[in-house]
Amino acid sequence: MSSSFYFPTKLIISENAASDLVWELKDTAKDSVFLVTDQGIRKAGIAEPVIQTLISAGFNPVIYDDVPGNPNVPDVDKALEVVKDKTITHVVAIGGGSVLDTAKAIGLLLADEELDYEEVQWRRQQIKKGSLPVIGIPTTAGTGSEVTHVAVIGDRKGFKMGVLHPALFLKSAIIDGSLMQSLPASLTAHTGMDAFTHAVEAFLSKKANSTADIFALGAIQAIVEWLPAAYQDGNNLEARQNMALAATWAGIAFDQSSLGLVHALAGPLCGTYHLHHGLGVATLLPATLDFNAAAIPQQRWKLLRSALNLPENSTPYDLGGWVRRFLTSLNMPTHLSELGLTAEKIPAIAESATKMAMIGLNIRPASLEDCKQVLEAGL
Image (cartoon, rainbow, N blue to C red; front, side):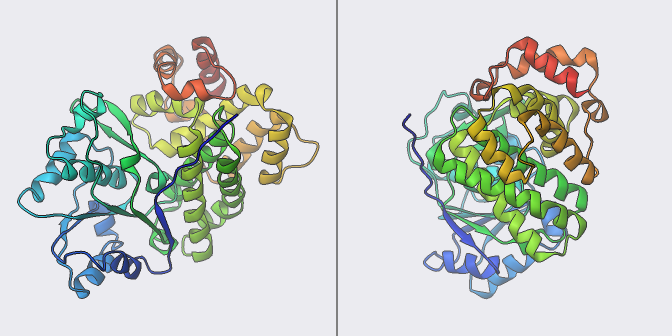
């Protein structure tokens, strides 16, 4: 079967994100940079060294630091108001997935003033002029947004919509694990398991291909080795850098191969209970893997088993149990009831999951009844 692999983003594996950013902007007008971040990043002191290095290099960036945790179109519009009378040529994003996705939307809208982002979301307008160059500096090891061609933002009513377009690939992504050393242990675990789930679902997708598999298996192996270390000691720079790389590899893998049943269920589950995305997908993963076990081909299982360092006599039916034990080691829940899910909510969440496009790429076909059974098994 034919497959393709398109990835135009320049990856910079960095030991000093601020200096590498200045180098990336070396031919840019000093007053033309729009830096987007959030209050948490500012208060944690993560953005300040980058901002001060830019200023020391002669730049006068316009700074917007009010991106919320779950941005909607009005939040993008609010950011654009800050630069409506300025000439911007580059957008810089420092933050997690919400900041990166907001910056992607800003890049599109600054490149084409005729666009309305909600109209793009609902496919009533097309992206015709591409995007301004966007440079991303991720501060969590989880979403992989720095290497995907998708931005997930709520519309004006708050309904989460993913826009997929090659213009949403970043110009450059600067990967610096030292920026993640202040991340709390719980958030380290949640974002790390988000990356792990990305990699596993990409590898078990019907759209999986041999090139993306390299990134997926590399991410799985690295996360199994380094997430516990980063969780136990946030100042372990080696663990942080390896987790940052693993999350990036997982992002590349799922951008090329797509996701599956876990993420189809996670959308409505996390929306219903206002859960952190990584927490939601991690808790859904064991029961979903139990369901998928019957459909995992032997050859793919051998590769996955090796990446997980499981015994040779283990089978796909052991995978869900292994994930439950791994979650327990990170002090994460293993049952959906711990997140608040009740039996009466299951039909609506299952119904919503069946409408998600990614469910069609799950390695095992999943009907409405299957979705209900997975949620019930996960309780």
